[in-house]
Length: 231
Image (cartoon, rainbow, N blue to C red; front, side, top):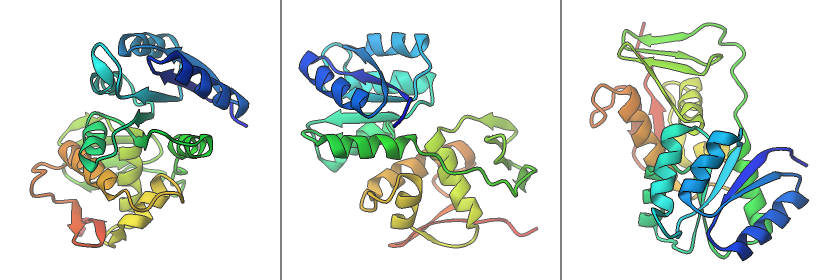
């Protein structure tokens, strides 16, 4: 059972009631919002652990709400949508979502996705000091801080964990499935589009030239590799 705080953002009262019932039964503390504006207000007023965000809301809509939430917070965002194309999923991930679940879904599937997005990789205790990768990149696992090109970089939890895991396997190719199951959980493995989006976001934040990355390299048909410069 959990005591995590979950915000349900959906304009349909019946769906909010169904999700509230399921979440409360699994030990979550539940908040509700009908619009993106109400979601932002709830985010400001409460220390939330996860947001369930419907994409198909009236007004500014779920996509705009997702972008605004991500601009203000690193809280995990799980998008709910009737659309199931890869293009829609990528758009949501680009807007700041951490995961995407297609309606209709079962309660068990929803709970599994929530647990996956609340899980965190353990900190690398052996890394007591920041890792100076190069003159323009320093990573502090313990403090969860990254400095790139002399500036502190804000990473979402998933972006940081992706960087952390690739660096812990520096100079070794890490497969798509391994990355997905490590970062999201054993139920994952085929959502390669997730990795494309998160790698792209991470490159934009730490690479001098994201189109020609120095650190996070693509291993064609395999996965990704963190290239640790020789000392």
